[in-house]
Image (cartoon, rainbow, N blue to C red; front, side, top):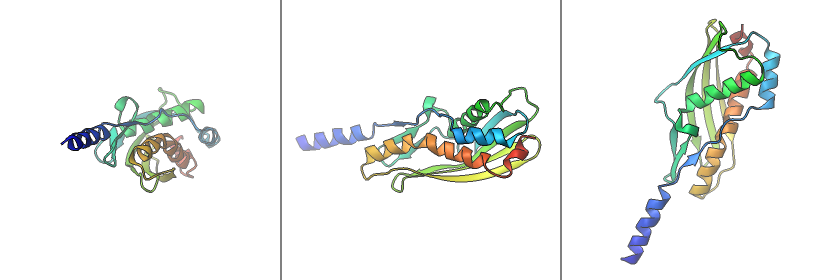
Length: 176
């Protein structure tokens, strides 16, 4: 009976964990590419999810991976793009050109150590660009550790996604 109680407490404690995604930090190569893209300053409008909007994704049976402030993943990507544009001095809330986006895919494999992100960005000028990225990260067998590694890898995965976007040959057309 005692072992059953210990096992029950252990199972309940394992399910109580959650893993926070770190706040986004701009990537120098992305800022450099943005500056080289030219074009005018743009504002960034609403980003939506292709499917259900979510602010957490379950990681194994250990617990969810959550965004900072539990905002939706598409809002995290939107804010990251704004940060990159601001550092590149290409962002203005009053710009006549507005970028909007759809996060077509946000998923990961904790066993493979991969984040999968797909994004479509549309400009109010009629241009659009769709990109997909896969970001590899270290994974391990232990659930607690691999879920923590998955959460920590999300911000770098978004840097790769934005890098894929700003290096896309169609990106400069979004800024004109």
